[in-house]
Length: 305
Ligand SMILES: Nc1nc2c(ncn2[C@@H]2O[C@H](COP(=O)(O)OP(=O)(O)OP(=O)(O)O)[C@@H](O)[C@H]2O)c(=O)[nH]1
Ligand SMILES: [Mg+2]
View 1 (cartoon, rainbow, N blue to C red):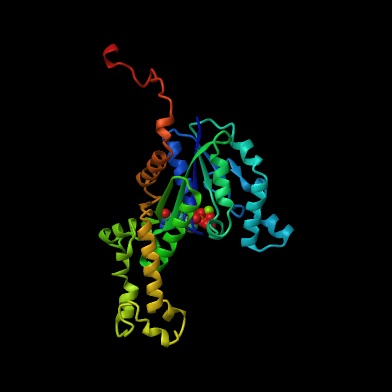
View 2 (cartoon, rainbow, N blue to C red; view 1 turned 45 degrees about the horizontal axis):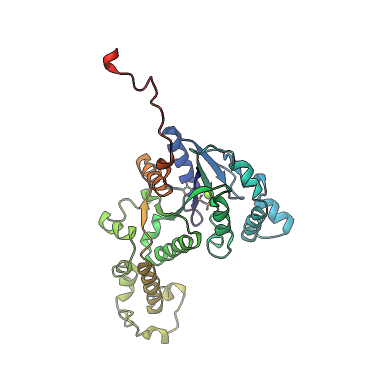
């Protein structure tokens, strides 16, 4: 039988470590065992002490000092070092009992998800049948505050989709920090973000703002604003070309129809529990557990008393 794991990923500050902590607390409250693996070589403080920490193998500080790299190059170096020392993971994880959920807390550098092939290699190593054989789920977090800026939201969604296609394991996308958009976005509008498509761009406040007195018009291919060089970055981000690019990205995401988001409010235990249920479903955690013998104390027959 295999083991179970969840790799928690997403851009910097998306709330990955906070979610890992909330998930561990929730598992503990439900008498389930968690094994917390920190794979962020720069992370210093934790709500739950990691059971395994990449800093025992290599820290970002060491990588930067010894190899003379900056923080991002240093992080890639740490992961390449991890790839050369995968025995370190095998030694720690191989003997774990099968009902443990192994939670991997990942760094937020986007390079790791897009530019270098270390994560697919790591994922294949963890899930390889006959070796560690961990049934892995990928959990990709994106901040719900992105929904106020459609372009940012689609860029984030594209990075989630890229991770999904690259890793080839069951994948869950999560809109984190929902508490921060409560009251700012109507429930009805929020629903549209959970299954993103191009219609989200039709009521983009940024493009409406631009349309006032904008003879570039609907962005349907005229491109007449291209003759006027944008005054600054802000102006460019509101131009017809930028809107066409957004529509193309949104169309690409829609045509794949693979990206859906679940909502997460870490302050609400039910919300954390709902995400865990989705993780359990996609790794088939419950199906794999042996039926437990009823505990005599819990199941005392009232008629016998
Ligand atoms: N309001 C609110 N703040 C949150 C939530 N989750 C995380 N934060 C805050 O967001 C900041 C970043 O959270 P982390 O959990 O460290 O994010 P991370 O994705 O692990 O960040 P990196 O590891 O640096 O990429 C912290 O100040 C958290 O307190 C949330 O659900 N709601
Ligand atoms: Mg973190």
